[in-house]
Image (spheres, rainbow, N blue to C red):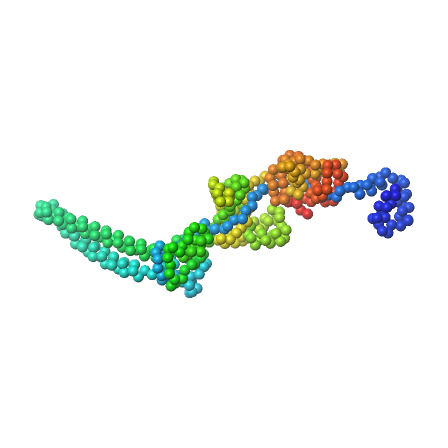
Length: 416
């Protein structure tokens, strides 16, 4: 009784003798229930709980990917010399990164005066060879008609035939020389391989270029040393190198989602961690391919994801993007908040609130891991309450005082 009175004194500094007489009267009428009430207040552990409910759940593998244009070309001169021409920008100045180009358009050229001289000589030789060929062909055709009437000697006929064949060979040689000269000229030119945009420019008019300057050993070095880099800005893929244990769960055709770095930073600042809170920011994508081999350098598996420009995601070649790959999904799964889970000795447990208000530690068999929920395969029934906050102070049989039961949204995320 004295402890009960002391308890009320501690809880209420305005406790008066009048109050005390009321307590004594109340205690005399119900002594045992009052003692039980005080004991409960002093010994029960305050906890928050959540009910096991039915919701859809998805499990994801996360990775940081590099955005790459599906079509890119490193334009490299096949010759050596002074850069004599670089295409002008539509604005009137020199060619700039971001300028649009058309397939086949001449973008840059080395000094080709020697090629021009060789071409003039080759064309003159071809014209001469064709003239000789026309005369030889006319003589040979006339000889064939005369031979049919027996009006030409056999030796003369063979002579004219040989002259025709020799003239025809001379034309073919001259044409081959033209092709060779044109090929030499093409080696000193850079033309757009497709409709696209200039991504990088590493040359300017007047500079000297040598093939040895180009370093194709990596994407970074090739980008830095190629005279021009052209990309298709309308089609991108995301390259992700996943740890082998994650890559083994990924298959071509699986759904994926992309999240830009800037958006991710904003969400982290706002502490948005549930799938439902991300829905408006995620860009749907799909797994294109999964490498069947492991990179021996870092033991990773390369995954390629098809991505498209959207209102929420501005894909830029070479930029980074966060990828969420859906490796598992189940509808109508029994789920509980992830913060209800206890892991010990490679087993999973949760504290369940029994009907008598006490805690029961129960072993669980789990399935998919969601953003902040987990699928329970065995060990819980729908509607049972599990402790989400305060569980570190519990042991089996602990009396509980439940102060909050958050509900889960349609994706199984807890709403505070």
